[in-house]
Length: 267
Image (cartoon, rainbow, N blue to C red; front, side, top):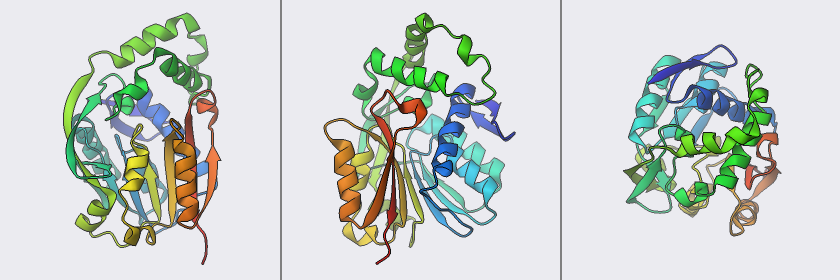
């Protein structure tokens, strides 16, 4: 386990220091966009919490914020636990299972050199070309203290991608539906549901029972747009009574990755 310092000076535990810093950039993008409003006393659900950067940021911003974070991969979950302790937020709760459309045990592909790529859908990162595009987007839009990013020549990108996928491990992980998790954790309101689970986002949403949609006020979801998934999710949100905004962040411009923001319309 390593440590790194985020751009705001916060020290955190991590597996990959550069990845931890980049995760913070993406999280800051969620909050800077303006589609989502968070206030004291809110309840946040973090699906695909990774090492907990979203919860770390919110725990620093608010003195009273309740976070339920779900992370299925044990190595990442261990780091998440260390970071929760650093926040001293007693309402930051973590659970060692993933979220999908049914309860089951599935094999995840865990990438120790790039934990954020870890997924139950390894095919989404099987293409070198797709990973190189994502890498280039991040290096072209880095944290402000990455002065070195512009000096990395493009011919090195394939070697970096190869290293990111090196020593991949297959790890069995427990999955539950979001509605099961809501019941198990006695959650009665969700002010923000954040989903970033590397290709499993549609199954997360399909695992929400009708009775629970009414308690979800806002949603942030990273969508990997394959086989019409972006349209499916946007239409689902509209049918459930949300306004929808779709954003292709600068670091994602040449990828099929989008951030979708949904906010419940007043009835």
